[in-house]
Image 1 (cartoon, each protein chain N blue to C red):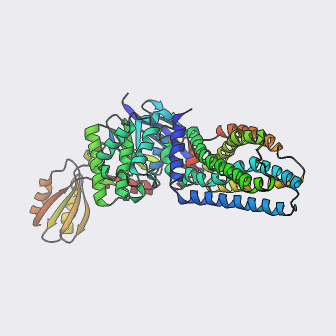
Image 2 (cartoon, rainbow over the protein chains, first blue to last red):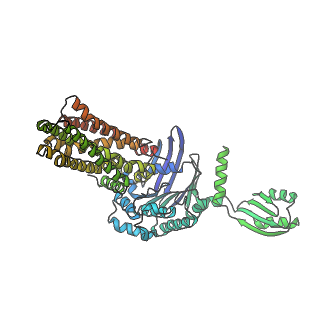
Image 3 (cartoon, chains in turn yellow, red):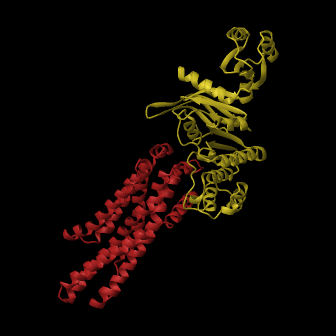
Amino acid sequence: MDDIISLEHVNKELNGRSILKDVTLAVKQGDIFGYLGPNGAGKTTTIRIILGLLVANSGKVTMLGQDVRIDKVRKKIGFVLEADGLYDNLTAYANLIYYARLYDIPQPAQKVDKMLKLVGLADRAQDKVGSYSKGMRQRLALARAMAPDPEVLILDEPTAGVDPTGQIEIRQLMLDMIHKEKKTILLSSHNLDEVQRICNRIALIHKGQIRLYGELEQFKREMGQGGLVIETAEIVPPTTLDELQKLPDVSVREQKDGILILNVGKNVEVSTIINLFASRGVKIEQVKKQEASLEDMYTAIVKESEQK
Amino acid sequence: MNNKIFVIARKDISEAFRSRSTYIVILVMILLTVSYISGYTSYVKGLNGNLELIRNYSHSFLSSLAYMLPMMFSIFVCSVFANYAVIVDKAKRNIESLMATPVSIKEIWLGKSLAVTLPSLGVGIAVAILSFLIMNIWFVMPKTGTFIFPEAWAIVSTFILVPILVFGIVAIVTYIQLIVTNPRIGNFVFSGIFILLLFGINALGGLGISVNYFALVYLGVIVLCVVASYILSLSLTKEKVLLSSKV
């Protein structure tokens, strides 16, 4: 069994509004799966369906080959949701012990101690969670997610609202889990940079529909080299720009003062462009390659579906 | 019985006992008892020392106390414990994380109902017994010379019927709190039952109905609660709870 989480043609309506439309995706064993989309796109609804909190109107949702509506399936899932689910009046230790007992973890006290050390909160274990910063709370929520030694971790915006230092700590923790614990992770996030750094596969959802789904590297390759930033001594004459645009897979993205940004396809040789400039007497001061980023893809897809 | 139900109940109870409002409500209960006692003493004064009348009145007064106080006080404290078990959990969306664990919605419902019932009964029955003893020893015995024991049915009612009945009522109120957008509505239900009990005894007394019938009334309501809880349990889903929470 390769698919850890599988959604097949899932539809969900809430209050007469269609939230998910024919969503099909699979998170495979060992995936660090980035689930992207703007606010209200349907990310949280998808996660809630996977966690058995909502029931799909149609379609099939399975976790480790079993129907997600079976409560015991969630013994193998760790999660961090938007609302962290921690109790302010209880200590960090009491919070973790509570959840450990709900998961029937053997020797819960030992496990909780280990988890608190893992997330660097052992010295604050007896403090009430109400006194914790957002970053500390998220670390504690990660410890709770890891405590049952789950096969899959579902993380819904784990760095949202956390200051930059906290974000780095949480990201590092996630990377540790990926490399040391070899967990399968479904990460829902707004943070494209985070997804680009961590994930190997992604899905982009917009207005309840999956717009992009597959290997991140493959998308990058398909997008080509991205951009080419050319700094020139003077403004490039319009005739040269026209000639540039006539080259296959080359288009002008932006020109401002002495900086020209071109969209270039993966088969375009940079030397062809440099030679063209030289032959027209345009002096180049610097040429930089710009990688195709997830942000470019995201923006393009969201813009495209907005126009539909 | 399922361990997870008790795990949920234990956490909610320990959280409630960390709150000052729990102790304030216990204090209010004690003040209520004082008002009961003052009602007794002022009535006895009006009997002009007639021992026979005082004995009869004391007997019926204490019997009604034995039937009413455990139920009344338990219901009174329920709203405090329900606050932690359901209201705060829904407002802070902690219930969402709880439902995402391998716990069924029925276990959550029962756990939360127990979290309200057990401490409410503990506090309610303890204060009721204490009030009964204080009344007997400090107020009734000096006037009648005898300690008035509660009837056997009152004891059965206190230790068997009242706990089952309180659990039944709490289960229904907890169900309502779980699926409505404003779970504070449950507090009105508890307050309504409390007021009904407070005035019910006087009304029954006025109609000449003996307090002994209370045991029968309790039994009848228990049956109704069991039937209602079973029917309600069929339609409780995590989706209903989630969508009624602050999302």
